[in-house]
Structures are given as C-alpha cells and as structure tokens.
Image (cartoon, helix red, strand yellow):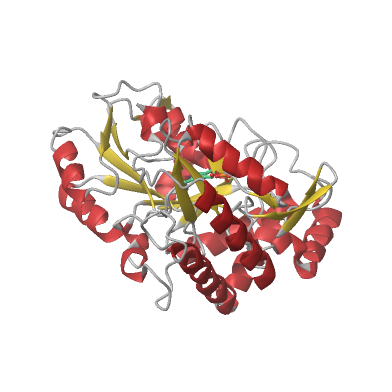
Amino acid sequence: MQGMSGPNITRDGLPFVNFSGINYLGWQQDKSVLSAFCASVMRYGLSTGGSRATQGVCEPHHRLERILSRHHGKDKTLTFASGMLANMGFINAMTAKFNFSSTSKIDNRDAVLVFDRDCHWSLWKAAAHLKFGERLLAFRHNDVVDLERVLGMVGDRKAIVVFESVYSSDGSVAPIGEILDVCERTGTLSYIDDANGFMVYGEPQRPFYEAFKHMRRADFIMVSLSKSVGLEGGAISANAEFIDAFEVLSGTSIFTAAMQPATACAAASIIERLQDDPSVMDDYLRRSLDFRQALLDLDLPLNEEASFITSVMIGNDSKAERVREALEEEGFCVPIFRYPAVKRNHALMRLIQHKDHTESDIQRFVGCLATLLRDAPCDAVRTRLPHAAVAN
Ligand SMILES: Cc1ncc(COP(=O)(O)O)c(C=O)c1O
C-alpha cells in the first residue's frame, strides 16, 4: 500500500475502496490520535527496550491496563504486543508447570482445555501440544448442550472453557450468559476472547446486549487492540493472582518485547473516546446493519447473525477467487476467506464496512456485486465451523 490503510487504499499505484481493513473506525486518520501518538513518541521513544521483565513498561502501559481493568470489572490487566500473543500466553500459562521457589510452584499439567470448535487459529495453535480427546476437548460451535456433554468427560480434573464473543469469519455471537452458567454450575474456569466484540457490544442500546451483559462474569477476558481500537496489541484482564502469575507463566510477556509505549498511549485515548462518546459506535453499527440489509435485498446468502461482520457465503474456492479478482478490477479490495482459513469450498467474502465509506462507495459496491452474482450466483453454502477444518 502507498499511504495509510483506511476506507480507501492505494495498492501498487491503483486506488481501491477498501472492505478488508479491521481498523474500521479509522482512528489512524484522526488528527488528535496521531498527535497523542507523536507526543508519546517524543516522551517515551519508540520502544520499551525489551520485555516488561527487564526494565518494566512505561506509564502509558499502566494507564491502558487500568482503563481495561475498570472496563472489565477485574483487578488487573496484562498487555501483550498482540492479541495473538495474549491468547498463546494464556494457553501456555494454563498448561505449564513452573517452580517460583522451593516452596511455591504452579503445576497446570493436568488442566483440560475445552474449546468452542470455531476458536481462533492462535488458540488452537497454542494448544497443539495437548493430546486431542484427552487434555484438549471441543464442543460444537455455540452449542451449550454439547458443552455440557463435553464437560461431563472432564470428570474431576480442572478445566477451562475457551470461547469467543464474536467469531471473525461468520460474525456469529456466543451465548455468553448460557456458557458462563454452565461454567459456574460445574466449577469450570472461563476464558473469553473478545477480540472482535471489544468496545463494540455491551451497551444496553446496542444489539446482542442480552449476551454481552454477562461478559464480566468470565474469569478471563482477552481483547485485541487491532480491531475497534485499530492499532496493535492485546490484553488479558482477570483477578490479580492470575495476572501476576501470567507475567512469568505466559512466556509471551517475558520472552518478547512489550507493545510500543506510544501505541499503549493512543489505545488508551481511543478507548476513553469510545467510552465518552458512544454515538461513534452506535452510528457505525447502524450503518453496518444498513449495509447488511442492502446485500440481503440482493438475495445474497449471508452469515446468519446480524453482527457488524457481513460475510457473503460464496462456496466454491475458485469461484470466490474469481469474485475477488472481478471486484478488484472494479476498484474494490475485499478479503476472501478460503481453505485453509475455512473448510474447502466453503469460501466466503468477509466484509467489514469502514466508518468513512461514502454512500456512493457503498451503492457502487452493492451494484457491482449484484451484476457479478447475477452472472455467477453463489453456491449458497452456509458454512459452520470455519476453523474446525484447520484445527482438527
Ligand atoms: C478472535 C480473534 N482472536 C485473536 C485475534 C488476534 O488478534 P491480534 O490481531 O491482536 O493479534 C484475532 C484477530 O484476527 C481474532 O479475530
């Protein structure tokens, strides 16, 4: 790309209307965010100079961690250089053994992880050292009855249920309250990856409030800062005793550089802006639903849940690639999720509207899709379990 990623991008010298970015609120086009970032660079420099275990992290990291702890109603938060590293660190910590001293040790080698089958690649990858069926179990996507069945296989071993709030490829939303009911009833720890839902859902006036109002009941809440916040970084919030142990046990805190101070500073100010002015997200969600409706009016097979993620289920892998190429010729950049991101021939086009897309961009895009798909209709495949193909 030449220049910033935003509602429009220039790639290899050609202009595109961009539906591929996950930084859809456009904070990096916001002058005051850029100024806060630059001021922080001048004060704290470009890096912490290592992991937090060496010299420590900077004031902006602590400010961000306090804001996240308050937001989630937890004692403490640990930030990581990315959401992926937060996920990997969590799984590592919860399955590792570590002797802090001759009298103090943690041994999690008997813990069983119970994943929603559609969990993100980073979670499956981090758990790859566990034997599937023994220390790693999976329940059907968003299926609470199946979760209970799977937990029945755990017996009296300690278990952690791992799931997401909003799933990235099909935008499906977890029945958060029901899953946590099961966890609480069975004395099971719960970890929710809220990478996609963070700062999006949870306010009473927004969709899915009935699910998101339960979020704080989870033992661990993980967020990514690359989506609604549009930067880089990840974090886990929980009780202090867990978070203190994660600094060492995660490995992804102690063995890698912390996030940039200026990123922590900009993230904190973006989160506070979203908290102070909910209309930014309210308006965005309204527009994303209008966009979804325009595609439904074309009779396109879309993902079932009306979240801000709109996926067109195309099906055949090569057809999906042809759709992408045809849209590219018309000046649109769209991401195609195909094997190995989803099952073979369950390809989908994952569309995330940018806050600053113009009405005419949207109308032109919808018009192009209508023409394209009239000539080559979708297979109308409704895919479920998109990550399962990769993971199992
Ligand atoms: C559900 C989920 N978890 C974790 C991640 C990783 O987040 P990050 O981009 O901050 O590494 C993503 C990003 O794609 C995601 O969708």
